[in-house]
Image (cartoon, rainbow, N blue to C red; front, side):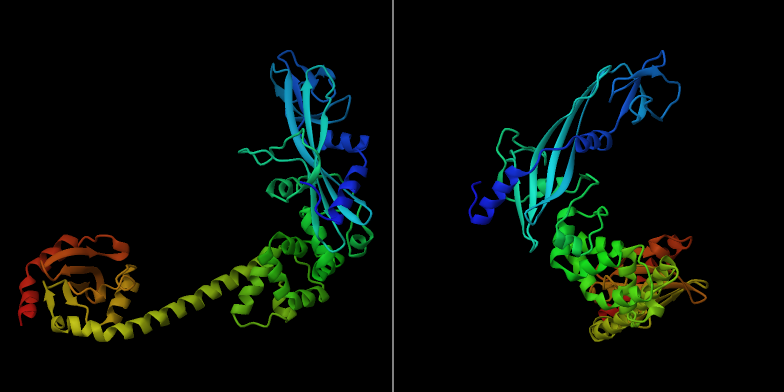
Length: 424
């Protein structure tokens, strides 16, 4: 699109003044951003597909080309051509702007010939001293693929999109040039596998990113740059981070450490105490607090279940009180009606069934019995009050027991006890 203001007009002019790729940059891209192979025939004659050198090679796997020194993978094949491509970035500056230049390298390697790649610049991120970005690039085409560009289109002002943003996070040429402001804010000649655009924006606009970079807390810096939510986590626990840093604690796993701090906070611990926030074994302490919070959650859930049981007790008694006291016994197995919502909860907890959570106590046409031997629960039985038939009888974890058929026969033989209570 056409430049809409003086800033964009100036950036288009600056884009045209950027130098072409240098020979070292092109050589680095060819050597480092694609895989290299040695194609070997049955005779053992191997050809380096990068430089075209041929030699006898008996080794398998990785080796170095004796001519160009490139690490190659030996591949037994009669193929003669490789076509490959890669995206890479060159980071530089111009007139106070931090620039990430995005390039596409396309290469065809033929057996016995030296590789001759072609390079094409597809986009540029211009980042001003306030962290604002402007994209100059080729036009994208409508395609299923993210990286579909119209190679014949001019380099113009473009809207930022996922394609440019993704490509800017690919290979980065190791010789990086940054503005004086970014250098002042702690940049140390490496992006540390952090998205360059995000990293430079944070260093220009976020004092916390600057502090983390200068303190060499790269793990936490990477955490901050990974998402907006994680940036909020850094802001929320900034005092904790500073205390840990002052006490010489180095965060090696930022995700686990922040999760651990959150658990400390939920557990009511002092997250500004070096005793808690600087564990010698982070994984061990993290796992210990996971178990501790699970115990707290289980207690809270149990208390909530008891509260719900108490709330449902009145309506339960109104529906089922007339059945209370029914007991059936064959000399070994005793079957009794559950007479409170709390008994439903205890039965469900003991048997690991959904008797309480599915609110069986509130089902008007359902009556629940508990079959026991010497007080131990064997199976839980549901009887339909309309048909007086056993709907289900379940043991622990909804499994049938060896007493299953016997329990059902016992219930069926005594349904008149239920019918008498319904008629009464």
